[in-house]
Amino acid sequence: MTLDLFLSVLIGYAFGNILFAELVGAVHKKSLFEYGSGNPGMANTMKVLGKTAGFLVLGGDILKTFLAVVLCQYLFKDYASLVPLYTGVGVMLGHCFPFWHHFYGGKGVAVVSSAFVLYWAPAGWCALAAGGLAVLLKLGLKTAAIIIDAVYMIWMCFRFSWITFIPALFMAVMMAWLNARPNRLKDGKPADSASDTSDPVTIAEEIKEIEAAE
Image (cartoon, rainbow, N blue to C red; front, top):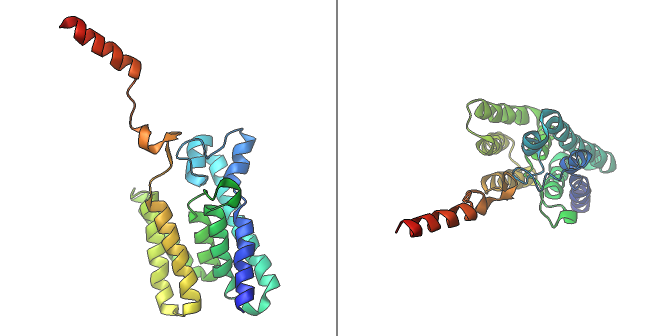
C-alpha cells in the first residue's frame, strides 16, 4: 500500500512538470516566467496572451491532473479511491516545483482543485462555487484560492480519515501559502523594484535645475 501510494505521488510529479503555460507561451514566443506576474498559470497567461491562451492553459492543467489520476488508478486498482489525493499531491508538487525550472513553477490552483473534485466531487464543486463567488465579489484570486481550500477541508472533516485528510490538508496548505506569498514579478519586472518607476535621468535633470536656481 505505502509503495503504491508513493509511486502515485512520483507519477503525479512527472505529469505536474508539464507546464502548459510554457507550451502555450512557446507558441507565442514568450515565456510566462518573464512576463506579467511571472506565474505560469491561467490568470497570468490571460493577462499576457489573452483569454483563449488562458483557457488553453487551464484546460491543460486540468487534463494533466485527470490523466495522471486515471493512469494511477489503472496501475494501482486496489487503492483507486485514494489515488486522486496522492496523485494530486504529486501533480501539485511537479506543477509548483518543477525540477527543470529550478523548482520554481505555478501556484497550483487548477491542479489542486481538479484533484479535490476527482476525489470527492460534491465537496470539490462546492469549494469551487465558493471560490467563484469570491471572484464575483471581487475579493481577488488569492482570497478565492484560500476559500476553496477552507471549504473543502470543512467537507473533509465529515469524511475524516488520516489517510485521506493528511494529503488533502497538505495540498490545501501548500496552495494557500503559494497564493498568499507575493508574486516574483510585477508587469514583467522584479516585484521589489516594480514600484520604483522613477527615471534616474529625469531626477538628475531636476537636481541640476534646483542647483541652477540657487
